[in-house]
Every structure is written in structure tokens, then in C-alpha cells.
Image 1 (cartoon, rainbow, N blue to C red):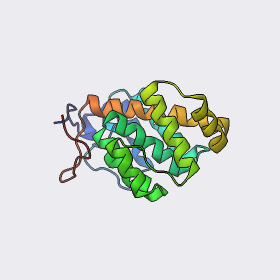
Image 2: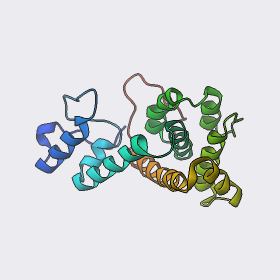
Image 3: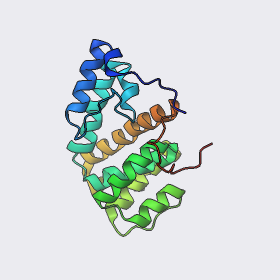
Image 4: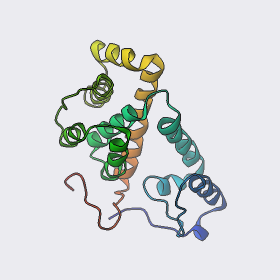
Length: 189
């Protein structure tokens, strides 16, 4: 059960309402009950932090120099590392839509090393996996990533892994539930 108590829009402070309005302005569906979902309701509790995190998340998802396919693959590696239920639930379909092959998605979810046909997939996976598991990158993984994404892309992917670790920790720390009827991707401990 989620640890966050839902608040209707009217119970949010003026600063929280302003941040809420900024967040939902770019969403296709506007929540009617003051509840956005995911990490956003948690971040609203600290409106200044929420604004900054939403902006950073928007950069990673929509303005990175790295192709969306590799962004989503790195997000899945991060979500699987943290066993972040909501993160995986939200990003698995985005990864599929961005072109990450189903066998790669399935292997990441179960903790297996995927068989890669795309060099960018392998580079993004190795970068994210090594950062999470080893807390550093081997020279080979770094060189592979720079070859695929350039130094700017590598800097962005490393930042993305840190950001989605923060997202995953937020979701796990507040035990954010999936929508009614959704299947949890990982065993619930």
C-alpha cells in the first residue's frame, strides 16, 4: 500500500498547485482529482524540488542527444536494478514503442544479459548495468559508449542512470502502487 496520502487539488498549497499545474500542462490527460501518479505526487510535496526534477526528466526523455531507444533501454536497466515496480510498468511500453526488441526487454527484466543485434543497445546496457552493479565503468564499456553516443551522449546517459535511480528510490521509498488491475512486473517482497 502506498505511503503517500492523496490530497485533492484544493488541499495543495499555492506553491504545490502551481507546480501541479506546470506538470499537467504538458500531459495529454489532465487528472481531475489532484493526483498525477508515479513520482510526481511525491515531488509535489516539495514544489521547488518537483519543478527541477520534472524539468530534468523532460530533458532526458525529450531533449537528450541520445536516441530515445537507448534512453528507454537504460531506464529499464535502472528500473530492473532497483526492482522499481512503477518505473518498469511505465517504461516497458515506452521502450517497446521506441524500438527496444522484446527479447532484450525480457532479458533485462529477469536479470539476464540480452543477446544484442544493435551496437547502441549493447553500449547503453553495458553502461547502465556496470554503473549500477560495479559503481564504475570499465575502459571497454566507456570506449564502446563513446563510440556509439559521443562524450555528450555518455555524460547524458550517466546522468540519466542517476536520475532514474532517484525516480526508482522515490517510487520504492513511498511504495507507489500500480493502477488497479495492473500486473506487478517483479515479485513483491
